[in-house]
Image 1 (cartoon, rainbow, N blue to C red):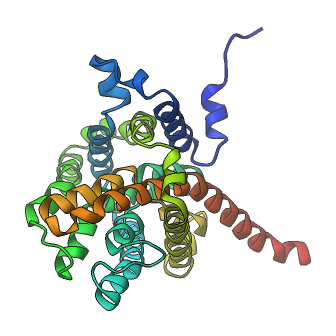
Image 2 (cartoon, helix red, strand yellow):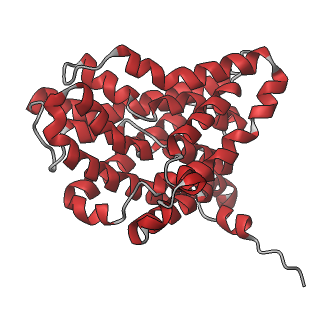
Amino acid sequence: MSGNVPILKTIQKVPGGLMVVFLLLGALVNTFAPQSLMIGSFTTALFKQGALPLIGVLLFCSGAQITIKTAGVALWKGFLLNTVKVLFGMSVGLFVGRVMGPQATLFGLTPLALIAAMANSNGGLYTALAQKYGDPSDIGAVAIISTNDGPFFTMVAMGMTGLADIPIIAMVAVVVPIIVGMILGNLDEDMRKFLAPGVMLSIPFFSFPLGAGLNLMDIAKAGGPGIALGLLTLLVTGIAGFLAYKFFIPAKDKRSDAVGAAIATTAGNAAGTPAAIAAVDPSWAPYAAAATVQIGASIVITAILCPLLVDFLNRVVKQHHESPSVSS
């Protein structure tokens, strides 16, 4: 009798399992036994504090996969989905901020919470879903999509529209790992191949500490506004991404339109965006705490529901393609 326990295969059966399972494990530990992650040394560094540098590794390795000769489809997919995510994600928050007023609220949500959550997708979860439902060009698109991870586009939106005063260098710093990775990957093919496994390998390692920054009680604390933020992010940006894939990506260049909905998440590091905005524009400081809790709820809700949405849409697409042959 084999002593092998199929842990990886079991995890991979879950939609976006490499991301979702480890994120939820981290959240569970942080919710019910947070001190176990704070014993110090390598344990705390890896399981509690390792998210940002490991996301940096993902961005670096993903950037290295974009080659000048073969980047066309991947770049177009990344550009399309990133544009849809950012524009649709920003639109609700900018409407509230510019039409209703900078500190106005929609369902109890300020423009800060709306933009930070809705315009910021989880590149790691997208990659995991693209691997299952897409093709290599879908995975390569993460190098562009990942530019919306973190505060970059929130800073752009709030800075350019006058909702916040954001220094340019803070925005530049977000995309440096991708640019450096692209340069190395194009200069040396062996370096590109060497870095390729880092895209998937980094996912569970940054997913757990991302989860360890969450508290499942945040959903209860955020209440209706937090739940509304998660559902708005899921449905508005997910359906927009799905339709963009359906109408703007040729059939020969895709496996399923459902991959477009994989941007319907709020990245874990979005929870730090309100504090980052408040640090450079103190006028938002009074709203940062509430926005952080609401974004935390959106992170958890979208991390759980986005893989289910993508899987559902994939089944719908398959049924649609199979129906003509059945009817005939």
